[in-house]
Amino acid sequence: MSRNSPLSPRFNIALVLSIMCLTSSACANMKSAADLATNDRAVAEKAAKELRASAEAGDASAQNRLGLLYDEGKGVSQNSIQAKEWFEKAAMQGHVGAQLNLGTLYLEGKGAPQSAQMALVWFSRAAEQEDGLACAKLGWMYERGRGVLQDFIQAYMWYNLGAARGEWKAADARDALAKQMTPAQIADAQRLAREWKPKGK
Image 1 (cartoon, helix red, strand yellow):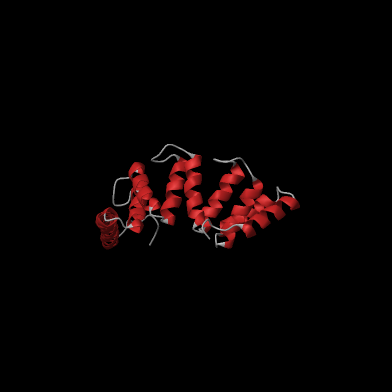
Image 2 (cartoon, helix red, strand yellow):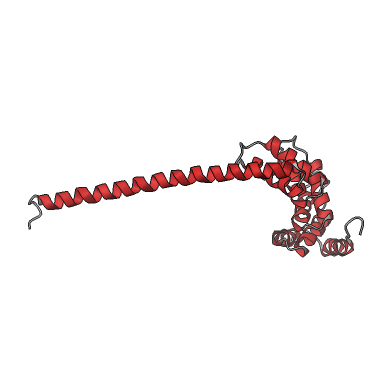
């Protein structure tokens, strides 16, 4: 068959049918993806409703999770003010995750006026419960001078405490900070980390 000869009618029909099949399966896939998104939204909304009942009953874990849903806009409309209110309720009950989340909102100025001092308060409360991430966040605040005077010795101490509690990013931050410190400063920071104890212990 030469390159210039017309295609046979059978080939044309087969080509058209193949294109139709591909198009219809692509449309079917688009519909199922839309159905999945609608289904996911319905599941998220149902979960938020159930979580709200527990949160309103005073369950700190549910309050924190509901705060996260509001912060992310999952199952509810995104609302930083509502997120802050739910984090605050849980944080006041001593929920570590909520204390960290509330501190982060204050640090970023989401749902509350930006306040490094308030972030410091909530990160400190979580650190008193020996939370590694809270220790790392305190290290970051001291390193950068956010809400406190810049203090590399305190920053190193908090990073060291965070690393000792399993927060690997704190170890990386501590090691990077050590390059800007004298051996005497590092020794002081290590001593402070060894001597640190949560209040009341």
